[in-house]
Length: 424
Image (cartoon, rainbow, N blue to C red):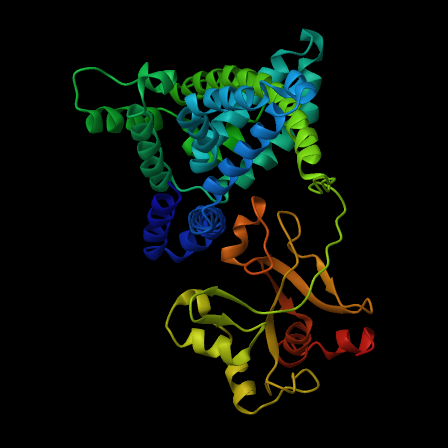
């Protein structure tokens, strides 16, 4: 799905530079998500992590059954967890589709924003609805503007057709009712999907940003009176998603209790306490700057340099384009005080074995003396599996070396006054 979307957006951008810029954020977000999942899947396979976890769970089950008291308390635990996850898998396609439809197509997201606003306003006392509209319409307008900033009609139609086509091929027990009820009879599937999407887009005025922002939102009356087939389709999807959410909330409630028991008995089994999940908290993590070997006969040094920027830039890949001043300065060996002596170059990236995860991007990296040495960027591709298993042999995070940041500020941006303010 992500690869298809990016291919569609990249092809559209080749024909229109302004559109290329408009879609750039969506493309990079998709690429980042895709690479994250690909890295996880590769790690699961190469580490044989599923088989390892199954062995661990089998040993845990044996431990539970070997003790009368534990068996009485946790005897059905592993089976209960399996049953619950089988329920999760039973609507996995449906859940994934309902979660992706809005992220994939701007028009569907725009329709959702409008329907949600209408729904919330209708829930207010009749006498308060105008006040609610007046107080909140500005927020809706800004939200819609943000969506239109990365919207293109043809891209949206192509991706929506693919999404509807996916839904029409799901197993019978995971069908999207809103799709099944709308597709016409008497056509082959491709023609059904094409006719359905084209008709929904043809009759919606939401595809016109000027109409939506300047006419639809003009007053409570114009807002309330507007409706179209796309809005109705979104309502059906939203209702279906709400029903699934109720079931997911029920499962999560049960799973939270089961996983609490799972952790408790596993601590007994391993005879040690576990560190609590640090997500959504203020986190401090520590480690060492070090390279690693992600594959046989391959060693990644802990530092990259400006030389590497130039080497990648020479491949012609637009992702590696760089300002020409960088090469001029590098050829002149104009590194100032920012060179790393053992490589006779300015360090650009650095690897370290700290376990960073979502939310750490942009965090400062400090040495043992509390001095800023870099800024965290992301995990290495092979370390995306850290969500499931961390190991010092392959778990690495990537940061930008602060010496490169300061060098670029001084030599490229001519911002020595900033360095002077910082006492550098």
